[in-house]
Amino acid sequence: MDRRDFVRLGLAAGAAAGMPTAAGGKDLDAVLDADVRAQQALMERGKLTSKTLVQRYLARIAALDKAGPRLNAIIELNPDALNIAADLDGERRAGKVRGPLHGIPVLLKDNIATGDRMSTSAGSLALDGVRATRDAFVAARLRAAGAVILGKTNLSEWANMRSTHSVSGWSGRGGQTRNPYALDRNTSGSSSGAGAAMAAGLATLAIGTETDGSIVSPASICGIVGIKPTLGLVSRSGIIPIAHSQDTAGPMTRTVADAALLLAAIAGADPDDAATQTGEDKPGDYAAALRTDGLQGKRLGVARNFFGNHPAVDAVITAELAVLQAQGATLVDVQLPNADKYGDTELEVLLSEFRPDLEAYLARYAAHAPIRTMADLIAFNDRHAAQELRHFGQEHLIAAQARSGLDARAYRDALADNRRYSRAEGIDRILREEKLDALVAPTGGTAWLTDYINGDHDGPGFSSPAAVAGYPHVTVPAGQVHGLPVGLSFVGGAWSEAALIAMAYAYEQASRRRRPPTFPASVNVKA
Image (cartoon, rainbow, N blue to C red; front, side, top):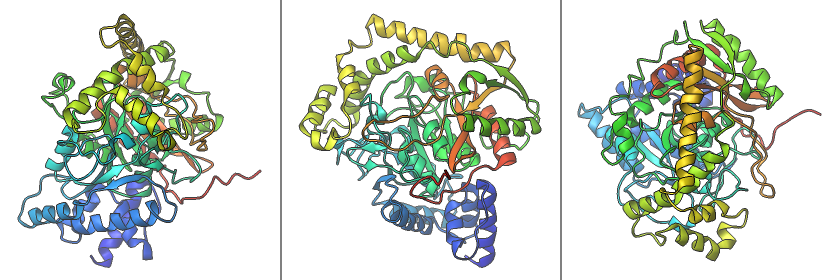
């Protein structure tokens, strides 16, 4: 790779991320921070190989994740990644390119099954060393697309469905993930490692999962892009579950363009996931949605009942509303109706679905594991309390074990209320009444101090309406408060991913608010 390629790539990476361009000794960093299309352009011209790219990411992981700031975002590396990359380089030389992700390194959250030499554990010591019998549908789609699965990311254990006093980003198997923007602060959860890894440039792409907030919250707090898709656009088969009525996987990346390409690769119908049959014809041309005029003529509802939680965050987002208007959007102040009516019923649904869904996963993907039931898991944690329960308990596991199952009247009523108030009398209603293309609001607050005594103390966010409804949600970096990232959310009706991507891309390209982390020990706030 010659100097002109480095400079060109530095410009591409800087433009994509909205950050200063690389120069001098930072040339190799520019390769790693570049987006998919820039990396592919180099590989197409023979200036870069997938194997070299994987080697460079492994070196950065060693320098930033295992040493230096010790982010602890990666729970396990794929021992076959270099060989896979070399094979994909061979395919390219032979004239076979599988698509835009050919040779591109991707990280998977450690609740996504891979039928290889890596464990799939949800961060729990109960599944440490347990290899899934086969790939999750998402993992299989990525392999077919030519992506290199580089490793697994740490997460909030059991996707943050273990304790009422949990600490996000901590798992018994993986320890504590640290925020690249202030190492003593939290990454949010449960896709904590994916958020930190993308912020620090430990791979090109990552896949997270969300039940409520677990993609968009860590994405916002780590200054990256996250897409929580419509329920049924992306298969859940082979993903360690919480609740089938809300669970989904989705992209976590540094740019909207990368998220669009990644979503296109993983979306699709799966015979093993009935929800994807409903959306069999729904995946759109997400690459075509990457238009700088994506906000022109759009009517956006500013969800004012999700402001007012943090004055400095409100100030950042208010300034960004002017960017939306400058790009041709009309803004309408609205109140999202009935958003306060599914907090308790959502938890009832999650607890009721957790045990049967988890036990079904274990039977199909990990029948050889030392645990087979929720009761087994609770007993395991009790036996290994010094490792698993030293920071917080397992109240949610115990509550899930006590639920009566999916035929219980309390569960069925709660699920019906959730769908009614989040969909027909929530998002659908306000979009229809105000003739809106999408809703916008702050994704959430800023990163909080990691606290093993009191647990998480994050504030309210905008994740629940789309999560409970099963509707799409895109978050994009919108600026910072005292050096801590803040995200702007775009939420729409079912299957509106392409439209949201167009709006998010137009905003990203006009604002360019993302800034790379510098790994300070703490936030420097002058008294």
